[in-house]
Image (cartoon, rainbow, N blue to C red; front, side):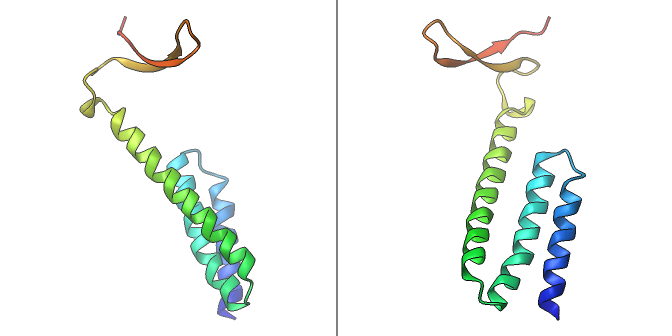
Length: 104
């Protein structure tokens, strides 16, 4: 019976994820849902969905980590361009380069 509770709890977590707008919270809820689903799949010997959820877990952890790193790089405390907005713009050759917009 515990296994059935896991799938219902995981789906409630997924349902809650539809109410959030913050990407980090969304990824954490997805990770929690996946962590709840994998034991359910393993208990029923459903190897393929367990493996796929492991892949999705890895992707979400990677994206969460990269999102956190980019947020740290763009924070005013860690930037040499405090108070300035950093944007990516194409140059004349079509390549995208970092630019700093000075405050007006």
